[in-house]
Amino acid sequence: MNEAGLNWEQLRLDLYAGDLVVPALQKVLTGKGPCRTWYRASRKNISGGTREVNWFLTEGVLIRQEMNADELFFVIFELKHIIRTEKHYDYFNGKPGLKRIVFTFVDGKTCDLMAPYVQFKGDIPGFEKMISLIG
Figure 1 (spheres, rainbow, N blue to C red):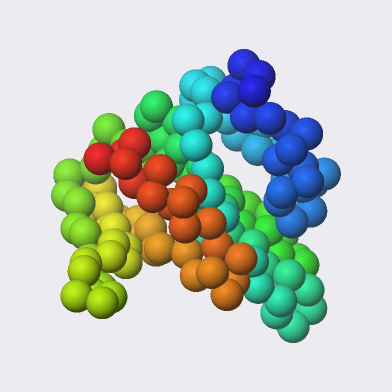
Figure 2: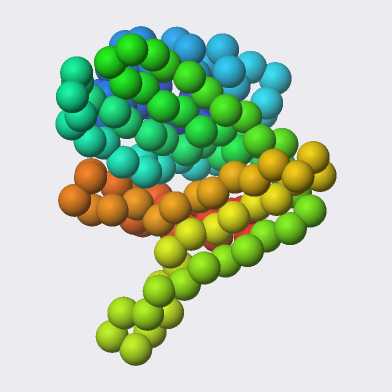
């Protein structure tokens, strides 16, 4: 780990197009505090290449990062502006499992954090850790 809370070299290996994503992510994280955790929501082969979605959490922001054949982009959500949290569950073998969390912000916009799918190389333990830190 370094000052931003991430092992950048390992992250370069873990992310699709990590050599492109990591420098951009470092810039996005500037001034946002150390990254507490991250998880891969999905990595899919689509026409024209690969599409990957990852989520990163700092003390004050939630960052959605997406990389595909055409673009890399980040969406930053400030946690202090959340006014509502919805938790949606599925039932597996008679036990509830968190399917998704929907955050509503003061401006009325929402952020939908879906549980990852293993078949799309999603990181379920990483999702669970992030959810436990958000609360």
